[in-house]
Amino acid sequence: MNANSNDLNSIYDDLPELGDDFFQQADLRRGDDLIRPGRPKAETIKQPVTIRLDAPIVDYFKSTGKGWQTRLNDALNQWIKEHAKA
Image (cartoon, rainbow, N blue to C red; front, side, top):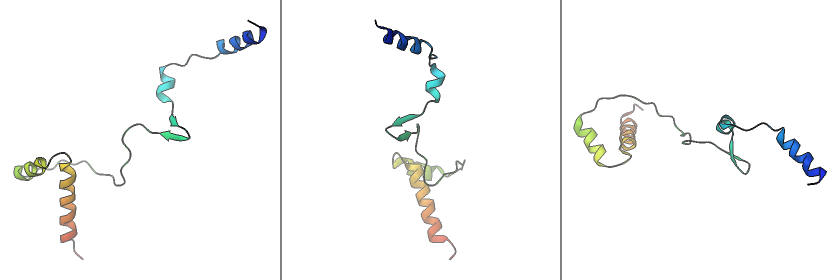
């Protein structure tokens, strides 16, 4: 090795070791874009509630498959549009 490579090795020896905490807090980027983990934020925020419905209503919407809660929400929105006071 020549003198220059020894100088580089001594610089790298002085660097701190990067632990798991560093990588858990690091930002993930693709090019200049910051990649956020998790589900993207919805345009409209939905409020979680507990509601008691008749069994046939729940059974009907569940029988329509995945996304039944969204369809139930849409049906309630449609009812509001049809019955809202002008």
